[in-house]
Amino acid sequence: MNKRKPKYNQIIEAAVEVIAENGYHASQVSKIAKKAGVADGTIYLYFKNKEDILVSVFEEKMGQFIEQTEKSIEQMENANVKLLALIEMHFQQLASNQHLAVVTQLELRQSNPALRVKINQVLKPYLTVIDNIIKEGMQEGLFREDLILPLVRQMIFGTLDETVTNWVMKEKKYDLVNQSKDVHRLLSNGLTVSK
Image (tube, rainbow, N blue to C red; front, side, top):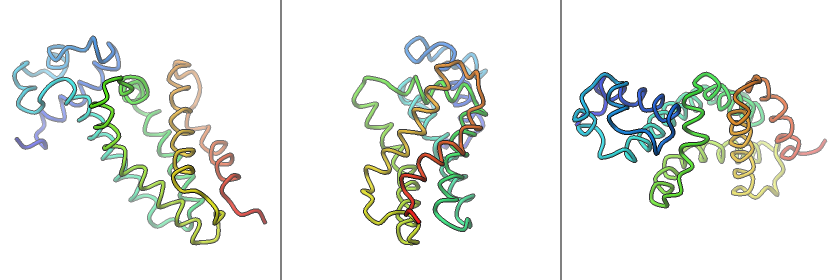
């Protein structure tokens, strides 16, 4: 089945809204179908089950985001500038789609281990983008050469993730994107070579 059909995208967008508004467990496939304006059976032409819909939502949105991020940072002058751009884009992506922010920050945190493995797989290419920025900064002599890559990656992703989660939990009452420079300054101060 070709996933690039309009109904696939309709279902993905509807799923983001329904899951954000009702929570994953209370989001029946029939609710998603109704929101997407398709018959219940149509959903099963594209997805195996509700779990598959959740993973596909993340895969689709994360895929688009990684592509945009890589494209926009490839020509930037150095790793520190790229890091700022990555932080801004991460915050912007979720601030501009609040339903998606709720889904990624709250509903993707499922206790089902098989689901967690699938979600981690989808996240890997994004973590690779972070790795590449760190490595580039080390090669440029901009970032300290004694950095432990997996730890730094965890600190960067964890900081961004927790900042967005906090924003969602506080009911999005402040400007998330405005925090980009402060978050960048904190991370950058820990990474850069002191002059």
